[in-house]
Image 1 (cartoon, helix red, strand yellow):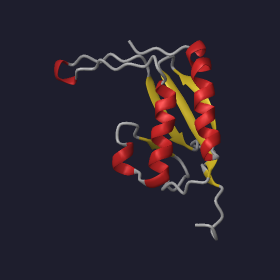
Image 2 (tube, rainbow, N blue to C red):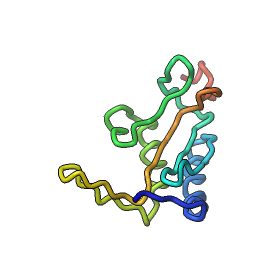
Image 3 (cartoon, helix red, strand yellow):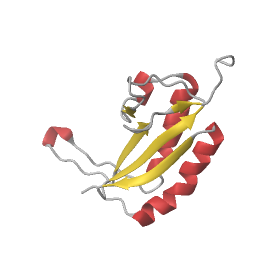
Image 4 (spheres, helix red, strand yellow):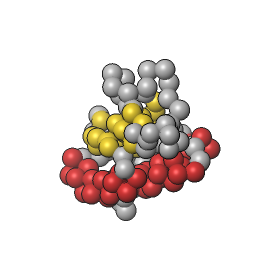
Amino acid sequence: MAYVSQDQKAKLTPGIKAVLKKYGVKATISVKHHSTLKVTLQSGPFAFELHNDGFKRVNVFHIDKHYDGVEQEFLNALLAAMKGPDWFDKTDIQSDYFHCSWYNDIELGKYNKPYVCTKSKEAA
């Protein structure tokens, strides 16, 4: 059963913050329903394609398919930091067996506070 504790979050936070700092992104880190480590990106230099409300969930299983360039590099580095050295996934969907250490969610903005691109339009 997937489970992530506040202690595990505290262990992973320095690595996550290092990735965020390297790419100049502001974010919050939280635990959702004791099973999911969630990073909510608030602002940064990336011009992500967002929904009309400025919010979007990143499909962590298809980052390489939906993103490219520095955005892809950043999201993959962030996901690796979120997993850390203790994360595992022994899921076997053919036998309907789901077993991983915890789930990972990356969100761009919140439903009531959109993600803000800090890169100036002249630099784009």
